[in-house]
Amino acid sequence: FPLLQPAAPAFKLSAAPAMDAGKFQQLWGSLAAQDSLVVTSANVRAQVPELTNALRARGIMTMASGGQEPMYKFYQYAQQEGGNGAVFLVELIANTNASTLSCTCKSDNADSLKAFCDLLGAALQ
Image (cartoon, rainbow, N blue to C red; front, side):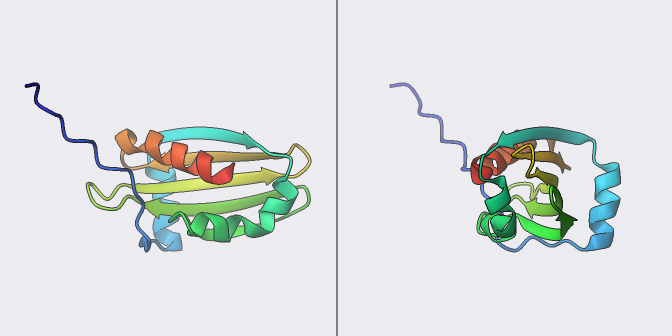
């Protein structure tokens, strides 16, 4: 009988990640692992008011946000639950004219960054 490999644990975010503005700024400037993604959606203008709540439901918290038509910026953070407790930072730029959500993601764990970006991209669809 072949040995069954245990399934990799599902990637999950903490419901209450710890972060403050000073730590966010320090980490943003120092984290080397980086990835980016762009989501195109005809509903970007309608999504902007709901982005904070929609992402919070997935474990991605908003540190700061602002802007005006057609450009809005959101600075967000999350932390992987269990395992290594990897930290993730996001700069999300919503461009209502171009109908895009552009994200730059940074982490202290390069191995978990792809899984986080995939989760973020799915949440923004």
